[in-house]
Image (tube, rainbow, N blue to C red; front, side):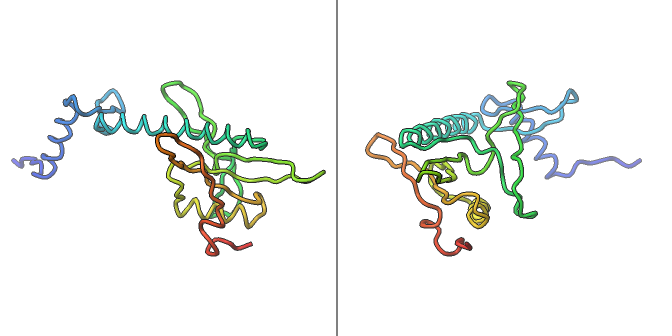
Length: 185
């Protein structure tokens, strides 16, 4: 007769997951009725993430309002770049299971802005809103692609500028900030 033994490291991992699932400090998500464990998250981290997302959304609205006050016509950009295929694609929508609806607005950059520059000319810029003002490598490549294809004349990165307790919006031009490395036009 052969006994099935659970390896010590697997047993410890399973017991840790059970402790987290029963703990008041962690929130556990369950996938199905069979009780398959999805993930245990620290409740304080969940709260931080919720506050951070809300703060980012408020800052995005502030940046949009400020640009509108400066005479720009703003709209949500609902496209994205597929860097492998080197083409513009429709951005995927995110599904919110709690509200049971699709969320629009997952495009890159966040906004497209138009402003009349002459009798028949318009300036068209892309605006990406980042609290810290730092783009990832993939976001930098996407910005360079937009500028190279002439979709946007400029891409601005809106970031937080603190004046004491007051939060103001500061804009960086993509080419000025990241220089010649991404200037392929």
